[in-house]
Image (cartoon, rainbow, N blue to C red; front, top):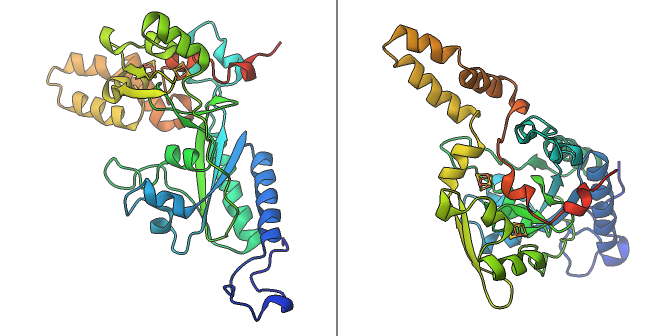
Length: 309
Ligand code: SF4
Ligand code: SF4
């Protein structure tokens, strides 16, 4: 059991501090231990935010305190999906099955148990998937920004980490009070190279890879200081290209099959490569989560981390 005390030492008991207040040094020690544990559980990065930060950005009902009464802190982990080798695979379609093993979810599951066992404070995995309708109760992307792990980008609003670029995020909400990390002061996107590209061709590399004015999904403008001025992202169009085999697609494919009147056509649909992959994507969720990485493939952020021998 970690030595973190929820009662104050004798010398402080008569001052006006809250009786549940934990000494600052113990907060720091706990923070250091929790971050080290997160990394040992498979995270590449870890950041901490206090729950007050959500008040300015998330509506009531979608804040950590709505999900766990008495919540004080949110610990956020980020992990790489595809390996450096996967990005170099000759067939881009292989990206959808290479390395997407949810290391972030594994890390946060272990970390949640670690906090409860070691510090005897409540902890839950933040719900990043919807339990009703299509709106998840908690945004991992917002959590990543508020915990200082990254900032939003021109590419599908993906939160880019300054070191690794694209990461997959999960979060843990806890009643344990922890010191918050500073949010990033400087935007990760656009990279200086992208600003230069924009000056020359009116598009950044990600916009050029998937241009909205040529049937793609991305557009935007950069202001005179080199910052994001406006962003356009066609999420519906992107989803139809990047997420073809998930549960939602299974529902649509099933509806199409059961309402097909012609028996031969129905049989062909059931035995098609598309339906087989859709069933596989539902049964073995790891197998096929996303089918397009092209806006990230051209992004310079994190490229250094993918240079190996
Ligand atoms: S994931 Fe693919 S379809 Fe979606 S914005 Fe990026 S390049 Fe375009
Ligand atoms: S390529 Fe990457 S850094 Fe450059 S504008 Fe697009 S998302 Fe931002």
